[in-house]
Amino acid sequence: DQAWYQVLVNGVSTRVHDVEGLPSGMEILADLNEFSSHKYDWASQPRWLGSANDLEHKTRGSVILAFKSEADALHAIEHSVCVFGQLCSAHRFEDVRRLRTCDNCCGLDHTARICTKPKRCGVCGSNDHTTATHSCDQMECEFYSTSRPAGSHCEHTKLKCPHCKGEHAMRDPKCPVWQRRREALCKPQHKAAKMGGAPKLQRTKSRAAMKDAAKASGSKEQTADTTGDEGEAPAAKPKKRKDNKGKGKETA
Image (cartoon, rainbow, N blue to C red; front, top):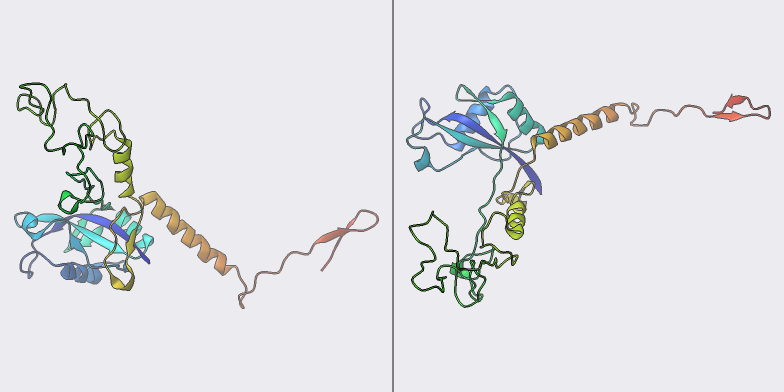
């Protein structure tokens, strides 16, 4: 598998002379290759952040660049990127997938449309009803009411998380299970699928990690230069041994 290193470039012009409509990834790539002083090793074509409809009425947008090496990603971040004659800032890009929840069983790995599991409430943990059909046992009490702040509920229901059994409803940011699932979607690194398939989108490496990798790569090159012409290691220094009088003598 091949790692991808992505950066987000902000302030890219969406309207370019001699280009009809929104510039394509191929047109952006051609401009970068022609006018950039640094030769990048690309992992894929650039892509806009957002759809063409989202960018239709905007003069500038953000573009995601994908590199095969950490050194190229770090170079773009530190020196910025020139796109269509404009110097644009570049930053580490995090591509985080949305955490899905099932409205039927409260599962975190699928949606209700394909769910075959028993129903479960994300408010009280009951198996008698779903989250959407939860209601208060108190007469004339609306569990969700327009008289209360958005998203808040009445004080009669005893909350029980269906995941951690804690005293809160599903999707609560404090839920440890919810937190772990979100973190699992942010693990390093972009991995391109074999045989040219689409990559699994996860978090890119941090700027500090990319710097460490670049330094380590430089250290390996220096170590290789210390070998002899034939690739042999330098001759070792002669060792000393002590004679009967305790004086050191050199040995071959």
